[in-house]
Length: 270
Image 1 (cartoon, helix red, strand yellow):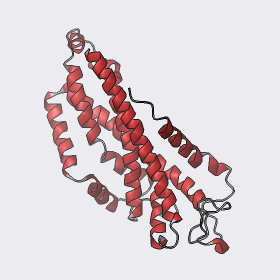
Image 2 (cartoon, helix red, strand yellow; image 1 turned 180 degrees about the horizontal axis):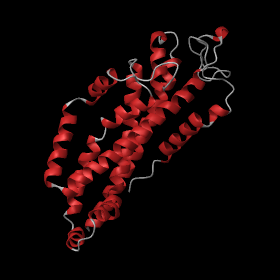
Image 3 (cartoon, helix red, strand yellow; image 1 turned 135 degrees about the vertical axis):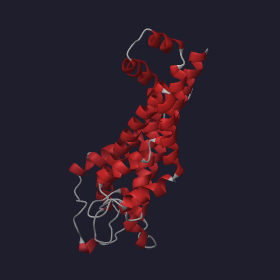
Image 4 (cartoon, helix red, strand yellow; image 1 turned 120 degrees about the vertical axis):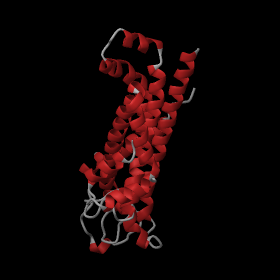
């Protein structure tokens, strides 16, 4: 049996606490300029150093983390719920609904996701909620395919057929039987979705078409540091480190959930 990823979960909890709780007590503001402290390397006074305007990098990483995590979690929730609803509809109702949904999924999958993101962002003024919307509508297809496949298997189960013959409400069957059985897949997709959304936001902001100053995110801070990376490595290193830790920890947690789901499925088959 795969062991629970305690280290990864602890890292995630600590990052959330650092981003959402520590700023209330931290002595430096993310926007305060210190002209006499420009591009200082990490020290006891400034743990992550300072940027080109003398701003504390740790303070900026914490505030930027709030935006990146908000976009990641919100996008993953919306995309996962969309995928769940669409996948169940295709698998349970079948026939014309299934064919229409498959065509819709294939149309979205025809375009590379990142280029689709670029195309949508170019026509809309980027903000937190615009990015949440754009990342959500480009990230539900994988979830929908997984749920559709599993929904077909559940719809063919004997107890579902008995409930259908007994004329139990379709909505009751979906909410009472389908949704609990599909919850492991939902949480697996959600954890992947959060990491994918954070990477998507960071990539767009790094290219200058995502979150724009004075708002900040990990991608924005990375972008600001690329011009002086040869003399101030810490500007890009620390936001990049936080992105890596969050995505790696979420992938470890997702792998654990998937392993547990597979174990339960194997046991139920016996």
